[in-house]
Image 1 (spheres, rainbow, N blue to C red):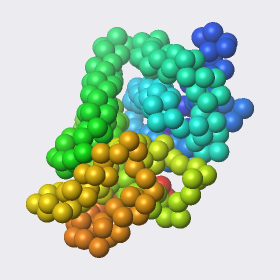
Image 2: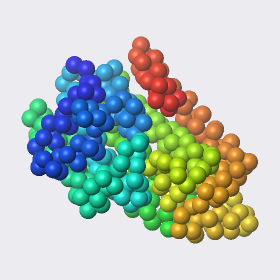
Image 3: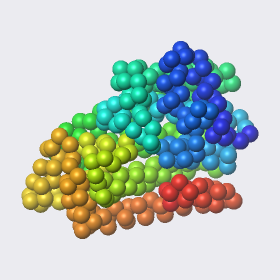
Image 4: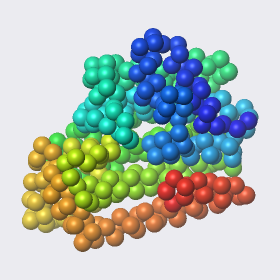
Length: 332
């Protein structure tokens, strides 16, 4: 059996059909990319790369008995992350994502918060209500899922706490992002049965998660520093950066200049503001690319890429399929 993105869309829509129609309309608006209630490959590749990679890997490695568990695991994560996105968009005041009004902008923050909460409960019910999983498998899957959600909430707490600090500690940022963003990649890896052939999956997905976050942070950092204007539409990450989210490029800068009083004063002054201003982003970008930080960053990305390629090579004749997919979604 092959797990396709259409299977995920269908399973999610069946779950939405069980709830109150008005609330269901909002949930569908958040989950799907069109009126046909489908999820596009562009969406899954851009905003849920761990699921995109999981789908590809499932079709390379999965035994038929694993397929339902994997499908349900992917669906639960998609529901949970969609709920998180609603709350984050409200927190950052994001009115538009991908040329589409955000849920809170369309229905108001109170209804949007409720829809986000509903998605959290739906993510667990997705596992509990699946008749094709035995009770033991459901409990094991719920344990993995609850650990994931607990780590992500813990990471968000640290992220918000750190956003109010005018100093940035690189080890704190690594810990926060491990809990908040990289843990989803490890969750996907743990959905696969552990056989000798697959023992390197958790390590491989950890490296892929690290690489994704580094590249994504750098992309947002660079875009915010290039031809900024007040009417520009920003991504969710870019809005969070302007709201003082501690991203890796800036964390590398703080780490490099931690013994320089002049730079610490300048950087600290920027992060004491209510919001990061556009001229500040220009300064931070120019400083990053004129310092050792950018070189260290590039070396880290290169080493992670090499580790991932080495991991993939252990998949033998399926190596090229996964490598090509990672190239397609711009991770290698």
